[in-house]
Length: 114
Ligand SMILES: [Zn+2]
Image (cartoon, rainbow, N blue to C red; front, side, top):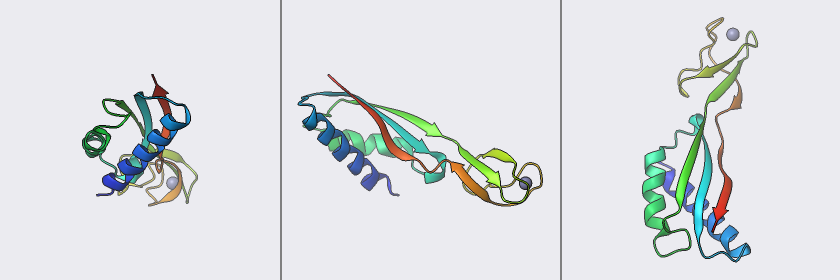
């Protein structure tokens, strides 16, 4: 759903970065996507390919690292990894919900230029 604006902003970050470093070719872009964001990697790749055509980032490889949803239970303090955003049940006490420790990331980790 929100992959298009997300990919657009990655694209802008990458293009700015290449400009700042006077590079005419971007080789690799490392992304971090939290599982909580619901961002679909395939959609990001799809938009990326069409956005980058004719730019310095054309043909640049996207390397995506998925960040698991880590939660600290509000009830008993147990930390656990949730399979998705709808399954935030504590394995110890079955309490629903907790403090989100990771999984909401949506960022460009690093960019490799030629
Ligand atoms: Zn608990």
